[in-house]
Length: 291
Ligand code: FPP
Image: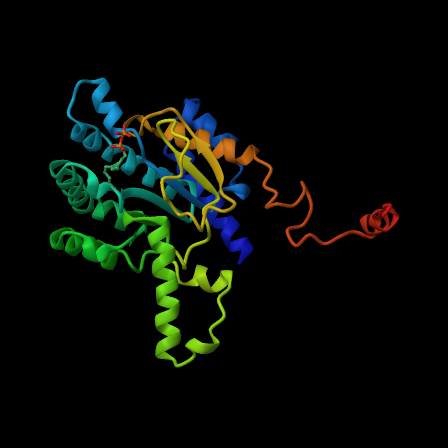
């Protein structure tokens, strides 16, 4: 399985290099990436569309429209790199507070994206999934979303999770309620024990590994209620770049930065995750004075 995964990663990296011109900046960046240490899951808070538009004296919706291109190029680059999962924060449960015209533009853009991208998703073996409280979406948006999710369900390459009407806290609430409902249905509510694995198994993202890398554009140092449970050990990468300007170069730079990080999961550098102690450290602990 590990050999198969490595083959897939190296094969995909070749696909990315083949699509670039030798000597170009992105080609150099791609060549510097270690295919054995790719993040399995990248999550992105796509922020700064409004500011991008304001700087050009354009209406906010122009920023959202300009944000579709980077969605396309990011999906394509992740597929070519051999990333397993990409989760994009497209619409939060709080975004309903925005003016109606802006919200409607976001739905229009999503439908436009879905219609236009389906052939590319199929061609590149990409599976699309939506996470969030999807029942609240306008019926026409839900229909088109379901159609693309169904059409790409058998694809085995990159999984793209679109977080729509998504909130990290509502996701945890939904997971807890689904655990309770199931236990009640099965008549074992009175003996129910909840642990981390059980909650993880009831999240919208239960079938995906947790994000390794969380990217936020536009320089804001906030998590904005995104994947709160899953990002416990994610590496954070914040760029000043506004989402409509986020290019392949920025994505490759973020992956390279991720590969420089020393991931310790609360342990020490180079120590195993389960915290096994060596015989030496047992002796040192025994020699410590106890008051
Ligand atoms: C945040 O920028 C962005 C959003 C709320 C929407 C993201 C939408 C897109 C990138 C467009 C299309 C998406 C898909 C999936 C096709 P903001 O408006 O909060 O920016 P600001 O902080 O500068 O005001």
